[in-house]
Length: 315
Length: 325
Image 1 (cartoon, rainbow over the protein chains, first blue to last red):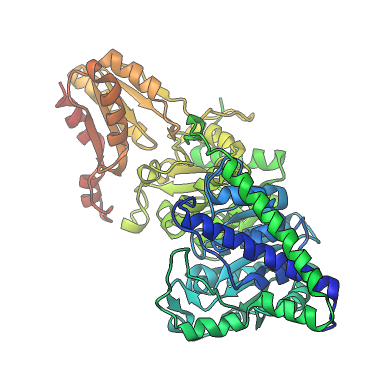
Image 2 (cartoon, rainbow over the protein chains, first blue to last red; image 1 turned 180 degrees about the vertical axis):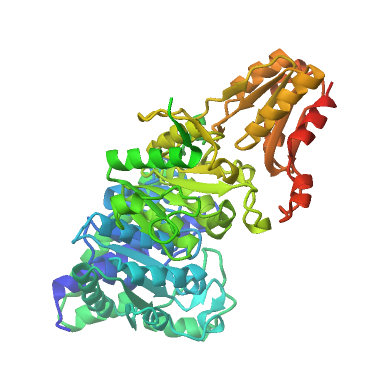
């Protein structure tokens, strides 16, 4: 892999944007502004950034319940995202649904899933539609977690994806835990290997190495786009915070968490930039720019109104 | 006017819409090649429209619903055929959590133009997994429209409306109706959802009946008039969601009596819903308690000796209504 400073600075900026966004949502949760829970992807930022930097605006996205980064990288306005997190009318879905269910038609984000595994058959349907439209360009990127790969839907949809040859790039964010249960307690087979049973091109890589995710995704996305065939990429990563905002994660050891913190994708990208001669000031400037964007979005969200109920919502 | 069967009327609606709009597609098991629809509704469509518009699937209801939802998100107008209404249970998440909620959850950014055709009811003698009327279960879910055509004319008109509707429609058909004939115009026409049909005017009691039970209601009404001089008004709501409560209420104000006849299970059924609406709003109009006539809370059995006891028939309707006077 050739080092490219501009690209690395972009990796850093986008990953830092997600990190700061998630930290702000956590802060909101602590202040009681997020009703119920929220699922943050702190530690997993490279999975969204490395994949989605290869995705075009016209492509479609289906995100997971832990999908803020995926949604931001697809292009949703940060202010509208933040407002949705705390249920404000200016949110991307009018504040109706919050953290878990961001949909943004303006950037072809078809919606995030609160039902684990429900995205698989819908993804096949989107792929089918692209085939029926004889679209030779657009693809769908469809995220799922390690836990979802144990749902029956996964196997049924892999069969259909293979049978109908749909242009869908399935990305597994394998953060090792489905809520508090380690993946190895739920399945004996690695996720990318499950996909290969269905004659679907599949691969795995270090999900905390943003460049590796980027180049591996590029290769598979080019394949999906040009061949109009599905592919599966498993990204091994870790959420260094709990399943949901207030999870104290008693199911993991401090040693394990610390070990993964050493592999933090943002820290790794920063180290590479510094090692290759990028001045620290340049890195700090990127961070300051992001900090401003997040603060502006947070102010916007807090100062917005809550949505009003209307009988027109009755169906 | 020309007479065709309920099944042919459904096919004609699909055919006309497919001719008119390339975005209309069909997805299901055995709808194209093979059986061409277990009840023959899609017969001949594969030959005319080909595999890209009449899409056969493996036995995988989750994928059928998912394919339809995904395709609809991208602007298609899929007509799903679930081979037997009972099988909708296999893709319940797609119906309950996905299709029904897309409009609300996306704040109207997306809405689904999607019809799910569901052959329901007893009629094939195939027992508990192939014989249920499940519409009452789905009536409780916000975001779904529900149609229940009782005759060939309504079948074509309601399906033509459903295909154009930009909300998911559960379209409950009835196995015993597929071969029944009715007058159906050849030209395209639509029947608006939420408009009940007064299948027979009467002055003594309002009998709301749905789908195949409309014909049971009409034959019971005939006997009640001939033998007991009870003049029954039979109302066919035609769509359960939206429900034409206005027409039912006007009738009750006139007759002062209400019975609801359905093939769904009695508990939590359509009668419970319509009955409660009338009680809450028109209690003063009633001269006697409302009567629910529905399938007993028993899985639908196989042999006629048991089905006859579980599912309402003409004799039961006559007895129940007689008892209200």
